[in-house]
Image (cartoon, rainbow, N blue to C red; front, side, top):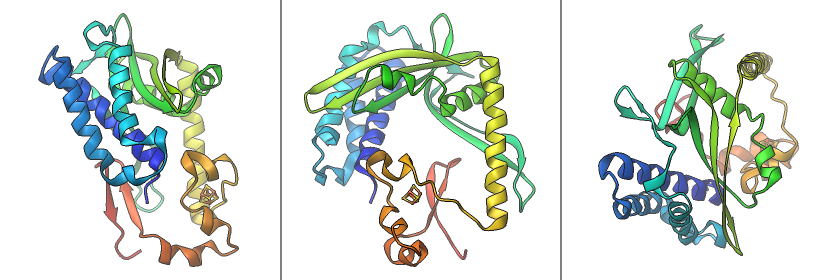
Length: 267
Ligand code: SF4
């Protein structure tokens, strides 16, 4: 079962994508059409998930959040507009680029894949990332100061020759007491991107080493309880977690390039 936190975040992201594509490209300047597009996209993504008893992650909360965003950051006066790359809007812009480590079996370059909410341009070019969270403030802002995902995405856009300087974070906090918003920019300089690349290549080589040794160290830390708790928590409480997996899970492989899950056949 998909985590309600991921489902709600995904519904919000789908709504925001549809809203921007509608307002800036399909029905330029029409806020009602933009809200309708967002409503439909978020609702389709949410589907069955409203059976969960988490009020701040309900379907209604997500729709209210999109409405709140449109009031807080009016599209008509938005200065960070989606950038057109080769005449195509960079809303939900994705890439898959070789990262100078080869696959240990095929020898083909491994691909680093990224998918960002949009690339925007005002006086400078930035990535724009929508975040949903339970609380805002300094702690929340500090989380993104060195965040590797942002740095990797900036690296990715640079491979297309785009002079992206950093990330505009548009955050929405869903609390029982109501909705709150925050908007701020974090920058990435050349040395930070270089450091990210070295660290990422190091991590990939470590993963290959573990794979060759058939040893997979557990992450016994905050990951076990992140995003509402890891799905494998019950299995990992067992001395032999593998025996619990076949009866409780179906093996699927996430294809980041095609953005879909695939059946695992024969391995
Ligand atoms: S519960 Fe298990 S699989 Fe999940 S993060 Fe923790 S150690 Fe890793």
